[in-house]
Image (cartoon, rainbow, N blue to C red; front, side, top):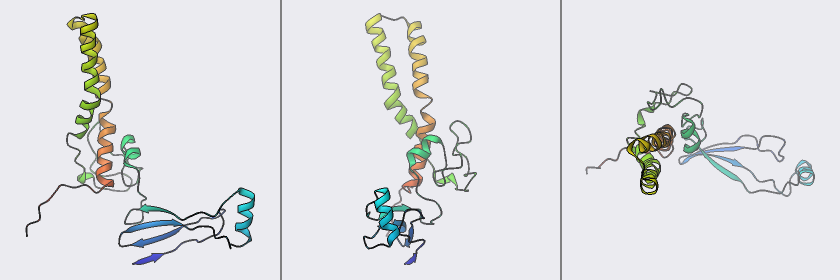
Amino acid sequence: MTIKAEGWEYCRHKETQIVVATDFGVFQLTPPIPTSAPNCARTCQKENGMKPRKPKISKTSMSGEYPPLSPVTTGIRGLCPRCGRGHLFDGFLSLRKSCDACGLDYSFADPADGPAFFVICFACVPSVLLSVWLEVSYNASILAQLLITGPFLLISCIPPLRPLKGWLVSSQYYYKAREGTIDKE
């Protein structure tokens, strides 16, 4: 186990951070302000209403270079799941070979038909319900059905595909998902 400590300070005017690297990951600790701290901490507590706090722990990546990013925020915006700066997509739905900012290889990503499944569940069912409602309530002709439900179907199905695919790729990276294997003993 290796331990690396940086900047243990008693007031919030300066960076307060301790980085601990273990076999289980890299953790950033924010130490509490002790009640027996120097005058600076007492002054900060009085002036700013600060109270002694418990350490906050945030888990970072194993390399320590990149903090963990939420798969939802990076995926929906189409950004790299590791650095959050590079682009994930080359076209509308085609993935790049690697991140243009940090060089992460996207060969691990295989969302398969996951985005299409979510679109079917959340967008196609309301489109079918709209079509049935138009038929039952107004006895709409085929042309009216095509002119009303067709654009609704396209608007509700195509735009969510890219954010959903980005979210699934980012989730695969974040949770280290990979294809299942069978151990032969």
